[in-house]
Image 1: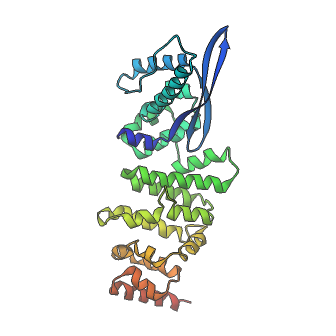
Image 2: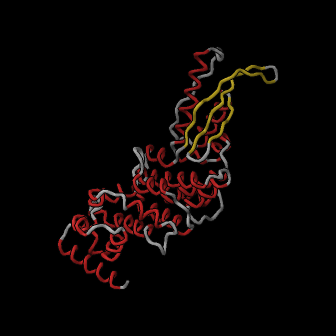
Image 3: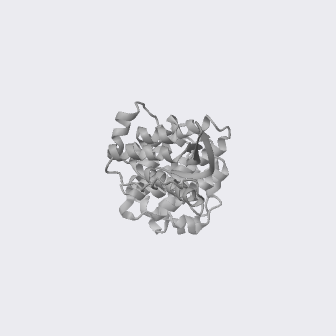
Length: 326
């Protein structure tokens, strides 16, 4: 995995928010309050230059292959504004360079940034789930635990500190879409993990969350974007997406299925065409026809969506059979 991929896998960032001159045992020093941010939590640590200096010594000794940003040199002019500002930027870059590698989950780093154990668990599960071979030692050696589902663990973590159910669900959807965008070598694993969480745990999704999940926003594309972009050579991924879509619209599997159906009814026909449903009719015509039937789309538009004449007449036969049951 490249350095960039690590940054995308672990969304953790350091930023100095306050600098103050302090005294301890009659000795003056500059204190740097640094905010550590993740998708799910923000907290502040207080450090001085000597703290970073000692950490750097330990890391260089134990993990010599880690390519870190060089720390500022010691200086007698430690209280000058230029030195303070230089150190501020240097400390941020130093920590963020550590966060962009797997080493940030080692004990020395965890203790230095005061990383919450429950948050460590989320990081390790994600590491194991999306890059199993690289991070298996973390599951095996660092923490001894079992987990049911990555997204369910996030839900439990957020639920302890946040009473707003809708906001929690929104953050989980955001994490899922972010993983689709950044961890492209594990599309299927990610879809299955999220699908199992959503359907098994009966999470309630209101209209705005449904729209965000399916369409996304400017920065994060939704499920429909990825279905439309999957080439034929990525048929397994496309089918996984489509099966997920059909399950979300299935009243037997999803308690909130009406939210999805209602959203699709507002969809433009050209957007349906981008889903390339005709490519998958031979593989699973039943699900596709059932999906289109639920949406109550006019036959004229169905003909455009599934494109081929034979498929269209097959759909009309399916529709006639269903209507005859009522």
